[in-house]
Amino acid sequence: MTPPALSAAELARQHAAGTLAPRETVERAFARAAEVVAGPAGLNAILWDDHEAALGAAGELAALQHAGSRPGPLAGVPVVVKDNIATLTMPTTCGSRILEGYVSAFEATVVTRLRAAGAIVIGKTNMDEFAMGSSTENSAYGPTRNPIDPTRVPGGSSGGSAACVAAGIVRVALGSETGGSVRQPAAFCGVVGVKPTYGRVSRYGLVAFASSLDQVGVFGRTVEDAAIGLGAIAGRDRYDSTSADAPVEDYVGVANGSLDGLVIGRPREYFPDSLDARVRDRCDATIDALRQLGATVRNVSLPHTELAIPTYYIIAPAEASSNLARFDGVRYGMRAKAAALRDMYEGTRSHGFGPEVTRRILLGTYVLSAGYYDAYYKKAQEVRALIADDFRRVFDGGVQVLLTPTAPTPAFPLGTKSDPYEMYLSDIFTATANLAGVPALSLPIGRVDGLPVGGQLIGRHFDEATLFRVAFALERALGGSAHQ
Amino acid sequence: MSVTDAEVRHVAALARLGLDAERIPTIAAELNGILAHMDVLSKVDTSQVGAVTGVGAAGTPLRVDGGNQIPLARPREAFAPAMRDGFLLVPRLATHEDLDAESP
Image (cartoon, rainbow over all chains, first blue to last red; front, top):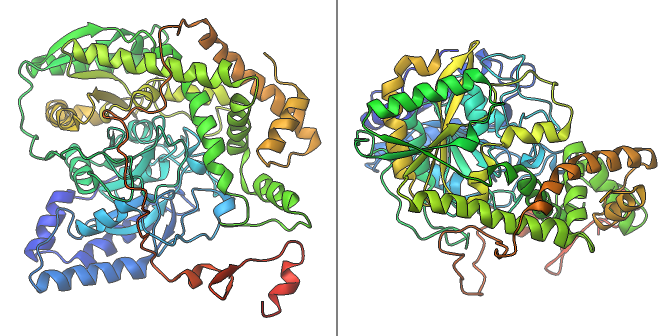
């Protein structure tokens, strides 16, 4: 797949200078989407698009600039956003039948901020239903295919956004993270994906899955694309009281920062004997590259890592069972016909939710129910504290960034993981960062049998700048080998 | 601990999910398969640990309980099937298709 020739920064520069019309760039993005068949007949990465609104926005941008308005860092840059992020001119269905045809009454803050930065939202992307999945096979609108190898999954749950970046339709896309839903698809599709610190980005307009874990994340074709995207959406929002009032650093400004003296941790629990040897080799080569860049690499231990998946798959379904109670046929989307209220609720929810969402709602309701709450939910919250403490101890000990594989394997073939728990294990190296609330970033570090492998950088709370500094340096050092 | 068919029915009722009777044993088996992996948590000593409910670095800031005005893109009427006297009118159960033909 040929990426668009110009980076997000270069597109914005040329639009601002008037050497390239935003309309032309938007038309080119739609042409690329048609060329790679981004719709249901092909990759099935884009669920909804809006040519008219996108071209209108491009025209408005050109007019504003003509009138002397200062162009933003994403001036005229086409972007796509995951279908669980509220937009005004396109549906927001979360990949679910239960929200079929639903158009939000308000716009997500992240979309408002992207538009304020000059970006043009051209489409909504496919996803596992309500972000529950690791392959984008759970969408009510059919699975998304990986542009690198269409017989394989793109990862999930933000697989549509990752596929759009990998296929060269856009340079920047938004996804959402609850347990790895940006980083894992970024790794599978050979692009950059960043999950910011819990609280770094507003969730106003992000349809809630598990509120103590959810964050909006950003995909970029390159580290710079992702850095510009995160810079545009980060920061306190008065509509989201969980957004933090922490200063937002210049993530592009750290691009040429030195790694001299930086302490990188290599947590042994992320390199188990069962790890695909080829993935391990790529990570080891990346660690060598970090040493050559001047960083010190230290072996560390995060002893509760193996408990992350059992912990995550109690807490996330528990929160989901509560958050998804609102989809009852009264307020949103589809409604089953029934003579009695309870029958209408049950009919709507059983027909509207797919099998994985149903399974997680049942699991979440079970672990919260009388008699099981202490054994499962309370216990999981306590273990979560231990997992968060693992990170605190390592970072307090002087480690600034951790380097791990993003996923235990490269992208797997469609339809090959039928056991739910086997699918859950895809998140084994990513769910820890969500449980601890720390930021993490995946970037391409090589390929095995032609399939991308992602390396994960995990940092301290609100220290995305250091993650980007390391990612920029690694991207330069690895060069073409990151995609070979 | 093992999830029984009766517990699946109970939990489904709590979650307002209508399940076909023939699916219940399969779902019970799936939940048991998943929960078997959770049993590892029971062996972890958490006696010195307090449960966490969030992971914000500085906790969750409180805001004034005043309620921000939510900026809707379109007037409320645009999102309602119908309105009367400032109230939203929603379809009635079962017969709502018949009523759709009438002016509410």
